[in-house]
Image (cartoon, rainbow, N blue to C red):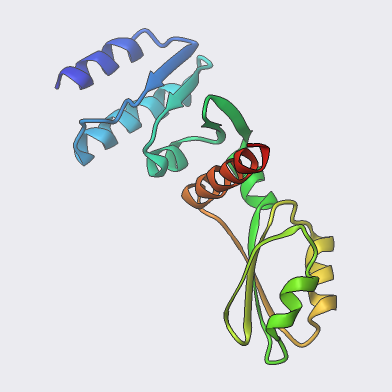
Length: 172
């Protein structure tokens, strides 16, 4: 109740900028929904308002934010709208009976985290996905079933975190 009172006391003045650090910690689901509803009402009101939300609760961030920044070890690794991030970074699954493990050595370097979970399936991540990239995949595997999917914000965060650790290891 104290957290709700603090949040409501800040929101009632309808500030132009509201900075919140872990605003949902300690709140039950019903209370989270009430606070979220109040925030969305405030943001959608007639007076412009920007909310900067810092949280480890990625599901809440994905539900509320339209723009995301990912900090890793104090460095801003990503800062862009979630929709653009999800358009740009895609998970690709190629299923083809003619695949072989030897092809893993000949794939473009932009096809990251390549895996062959079975002899007929290839999975990878592409960080700069475009229709031209999709055409390239179809040209390389003309008889394949290609499935392109977006990543959740959680998966994008884990991918960025893993990339940062790889870069740090390479530098050390």
